[in-house]
Length: 312
Image 1 (cartoon, one colour):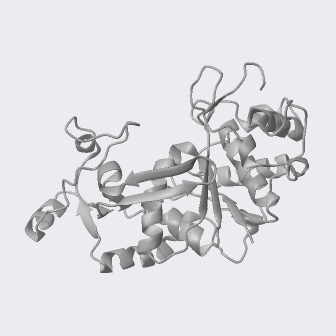
Image 2 (cartoon, rainbow, N blue to C red; image 1 turned 120 degrees about the horizontal axis):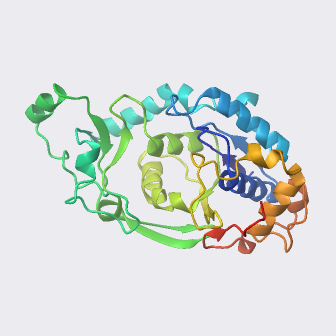
Image 3 (cartoon, rainbow, N blue to C red; image 1 turned 90 degrees about the horizontal axis):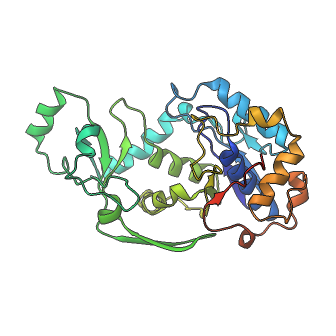
C-alpha cells in the first residue's frame, strides 16, 4: 500500500506554500488508495513549540486533510515527534560511526561561508573538507576549545534518480554536496539523518515535498543504501511564490491560514490551491476528496508558481 506523509516543522502558523505541499501529498497518496501519516519535525524543539504542532493539526482538520496516523493521534510507528526519537537516531548514527564514516567538525558558520569555500549554483556552501583529515592530537586540542559537530564522509560518486514529478536528476556527492552534518554540536541529530531513518521505519513509500529539497535527495538516497534501509519514491513540487515573486515565509506572515480562515471556507481555500496547482480550470470551491479521482501529477506545473494577484 502507498504510504505518504506530511512532515512539517511547526515553527509558526502554516502559509499557503505549506498547505499546497500538504494538499498534493494527501491527494497523491489517496489517489493510489493509500494512507497518509503526519510526522512533526521538531528536532529543534526551541524553535518548534508543541502549541504550534497542535494548531497545525487543527488547521489540517479544518481543511479536511487530517492524517490517518501520526501527530497527537498516534499509531503503530509512534512517537511521531522527532524531538522524542533521539535514541532511534542514535542507533543509526552509531552504525555510521562503526563504519568509520563520521568525523568531528569544528568549523564555525563564518568559516563555512568564507569566500574560499566552494558554492553550488543555488548558493549553498559545499563543505571543503577542512576537518576531514585532522589528527587525534588536533581533535583533542580543538575539543578543549569548542564542542564539535559531526559530519559523514561521502564518496566521490554520482547518485542518479528519477523524481516522480521533475524527472531525472544526478548529483556527485563529493563535488556537489560535500560531507554533511549528521549531528550538531549541541547533540541534536541533523535533518538529513533523522528524515531518512523516520521515513524508512515508518513505512513511508512516497515523499512529496518542495523543489527546494531536491538537492537533499542524492545524499539521502546514499544514506538509505549505507544504512540498508528502503528508500521511498520522491515527488518534488514547484515552490509557491507571492505575487511579487518572493518565496512565501512563515516569518513574513505570507497568507497564513489564520488569515485565510477569517476570509474563506475550507472548500474555497482548497479550490483556489487546486486551481494554481493545475488540478482544476477555475478556483471553484472543492473539498479535498472531490479531487482524488482526477488527480494526476502531470497536471501540476514543473516550475515555480506565482500566485495571481488577488486570488487570496
